[in-house]
Length: 368
Image 1 (cartoon, rainbow, N blue to C red):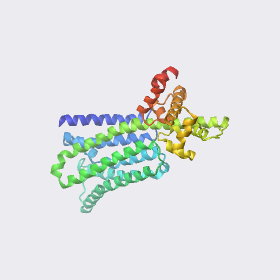
Image 2: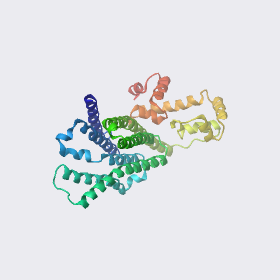
Image 3: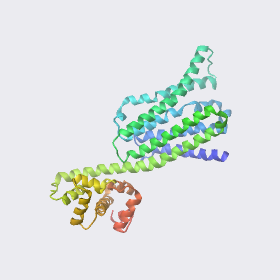
Image 4: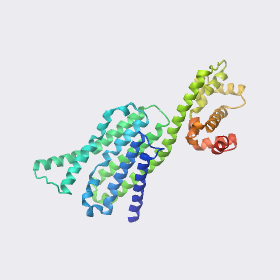
């Protein structure tokens, strides 16, 4: 058991380092990401709250009981909520009234601080029966508030994410919301079962929640820190490309389209439909107002390449341009491939190597 607790202690320390890195490291530091950093730090405090009693720490340091008494669980969903709505540019993110979301935590903090000052620090003593009854009722209210408030925030965030525009960068946020929602539901179920079978569950309660909390930290590390950053870079690249296209559009006349094939080529050259990773022959045919079968005939008649080859050629050409353009040097190669239309790093690297006989990195080093 001591080895397990030592492992979890290491995970908590790594979690704190991760949280402070998000807050202070230049590549992550931003007004939006600070809420992600606070989310990670709050999860770490929840884990500290679970692990310290396992070391019997509060028997010798009774005055530090306040760490255990503070309901950090009321704070983590608030930070997650704020991070999510700011990440997807929801209109709510500009509302000053969002500060009211901290009120349940402030109420809990005040209630538990007063209780600790009386019980552990013995600064004063409540003797009035009315005050003792009020305190009891307030703690009962707090215990119900925790479940209701968390369920309210996560459900509200679910509908916000569901109704937000379907952008690729939102997928990581939705996945994070899903995983943390499942962990919270799991915690509520364990807490409920603990109330029915206290003796059987108590010895495993802390360990089970430590595992769940540790998993959430690793999920944030991969899904948000790596994947979200890459998707955010792709979004920035998209803005640069749109600005470049706008300047070109102001100096060059639009291409006239007389035949179906010319219209087909115009969709690639002017609208850059190859950047859509979900592009299909059927979706392009629908844009041209013809059948998918007839589109194949048009391509076969006017070109030596098939539909997939043409898409890949445009994507590779765009990737090459970005790899050789200093404007994109600060972005990762994976993010560039993602913006060009490839759905994964593996697909991108394989297609690029088949086309150029070298990896994107080698190409950049040689021609960039």
